[in-house]
Length: 187
Ligand code: 5GP
Ligand code: MG
Image (cartoon, rainbow, N blue to C red):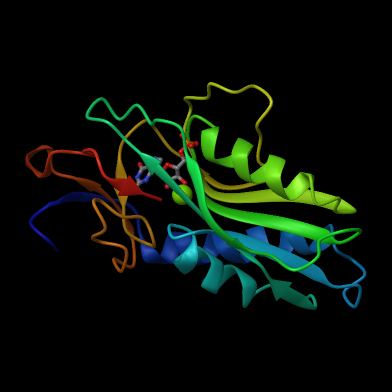
C-alpha cells in the first residue's frame, strides 16, 4: 500500500458487489432497453466507476462528456466549480443519466444538472458512487447512490489527491501526513 494511504475504506470486493446491485436498480428505470440512454460522466473522477458500471447495464447507450473542475482549499471548502469542457450529443427528448464520483456540497452536480437540463432531455437522473453527509444545496440530489460515507477525504477508484491515486482499486483514506486536499484542480 502507498505510504500516503492510511487505510482502505471500501475494498474491491465490496465495490464490485455494490455496483452489481446498483446497476440492477438503475436498469429497472430503463426497461425499454432499445430506446437508448445517454450516459454523461463527469470527468475525471468518475471514470473507473463509469467503466465498471456501464458494463453491467444491459441497455443500449451512448456517451457524452463533461469536465468540471473545482478548486478545493485547505479547509476542504470547495470554491465554485467550473465547466471546463463538454462534448455532448443532442440531448433533446433523450433519457440522460449523469455519472459522478462524489456528492459533497452539491456544487458540481448543480452545475452539471442545470447545464444538461437546459438541453431539454426527456428524463434526467444522476448516479454517484459516494455521498457525503455535508450538503449545502437542498435542491441537488442523486437518484442512485453507491455508498454513503463520512466526511473524510478519499482517494482511489478514480478519485485523486492532487491528480494522484486514481488507479488504486479500492477507496482509501489518506494519512494526515499526506496533507489532505490543497489548492489545485480537482475532479
Ligand atoms: P461538490 O461539488 O459536491 O462539493 O464536490 C464534488 C466534487 O468534489 C467531486 O466530484 C469530487 O471531484 C470532489 N470531491 C469531493 N469530495 C472528495 C473526496 O473526498 N476525495 C476526492 N478525491 N474528491 C472529492
Ligand atoms: Mg468530480
